[in-house]
Amino acid sequence: MARKFDVLRAVELFHRYRETRLKEGIVKLKPHEEPLRSELLSGKFTILNVRDPSCATIALFTAKLHHPNKIHQHVVLQALFYLLDRAVESFDTQRNGLVFIYDMAGSNYTHFELELSKKILSLLKGAFPARLKKVFIVGAPVWFRVPYSILSLLLKEKLRERVQMVKMSELKQHLPRECLPEHLGGVIKLDQASWNQQFLPQQNGHPDPLDELILLPVMPARDDGSVHIPGPEAMTVQELYDHVRTVQKHGIYEEYEDIRRETPAGTFHCSISPINLEKNRYGDVLCLDQTRVKLKHHRNERSDYINASFMDGYKQKNAYIGTQGPLENTYNDFWRMIWEQNVLVIVMTTRTDEGGRKKCGQYWPLGQHTKSQYGNLIVTNLNVTSFRHYNKTTLEMQSTETLERRQVTHFQYLSWPDYGVPSSAAALIDFLGAVKNQQWQSVRTLGHRWRGHSGGPPIVVHCSAGIGRTGTLCSLDICLSQLQDVGTLNVYQTVRRMRTQRAFSIQTSEQYYFCYMAIIEYAQRQGLLCSSH
Figure (cartoon, rainbow, N blue to C red):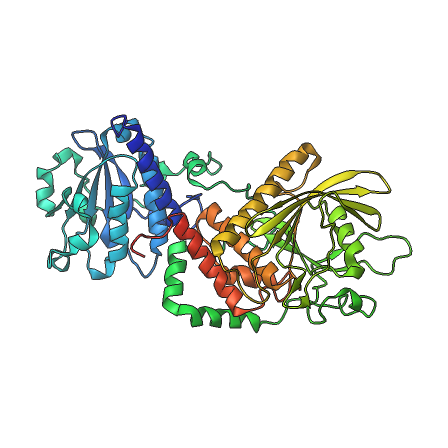
């Protein structure tokens, strides 16, 4: 209705709004949690309880209450969007639009943040669902008014037409006196405990319905004891991009060296036990005792060991099993693990042979309609589909003891050199999307038979050693999942946490740098980075 029933224009503006919120990491806002709660109650930005003569909503930003050194601009933008979303729930605001007062009275240069001001005004023009009718910049200090060209830095041409710089005394010429907020310029101190309280929902109030429209499709994320949850150092993709531009490639390499020098957080007693040594493909790639996968006990069996580790995903405990490329003497153990852990998807990121060296055994029946037996399991190749960068194989497992049959999907990525990085980040991200989609479909097919986490049983991921390419793929999945869920991520934090579960994950600084570049490439494809970059 705000767009006079021009549906195409309304949809176009909604997509712009959605992209802006994703780009700035403004999703799943929690107004009762810090620091957003304090920002909302500061009165720095608020929706006034009066309207102009045309019934437009009046929003106020008080510059003197903003201290850039004390609060991150990301939190300010969260508060801005939260309050604007509450305002646009009003029928009158939808129909009659918004008047924005940028109150600079009593402020000085330390209260001013050029980038933040630019974002606020641009967001109002390009991303707010209701119409922006007028912007009044009130009581601007001399440093803001001279040179006047500062507005050209802040505003695009169309928005500049709607902006007026006025003195406090002149504002009444544009808004009737009864519409003037009496606290303008901080003349009357705001009651910070209650001013925006009306906009805070009940502690257990309904979730923001806009989030369902804004967020990208992703498996449901609920905290299940995973080590991978958003932390205080999380950053938006724009901040990540700026970080990479600032420190450059050598700075990212130094980040990795900091991680690499850390001592593993655990012990490796089981991996180096003489009875298990022959089950390790590489003598220096061992499993932490604390996170290793244990095979179920069989009679007369001396060991429950397999070189495989449980690894958490984003808000999902044991989302993956990171493991080495199976050896001929561990094929039976590998398939036993697949069966016992109810695995639906296997991801292989290596070829069996690379550069004349054996990287992984041929542990599954390669030809379509062929079968092989591994211990008590018969595995049949039902179908093979070849794509440009990977093969997808549907396998059927049957227990010779119970005759139960299950299907598992095997993905083999073919465009990733050992110790190196994929030639195309886009191709790898598309591959990861295909893997996640298959897992999601397989879980849905199970229906009520699966009673665990909504993300499903662990996805088995392996390369040759199970730490380099395996760690890179899982790190990328975790970071992108967090980005889709809350709009932020942190590569450094993710890799450090991952190595507490699968020691030495990500083998080279080049693989670590690739994680950053792949995320940036993804963000550019999704339109989550400023066009100026």
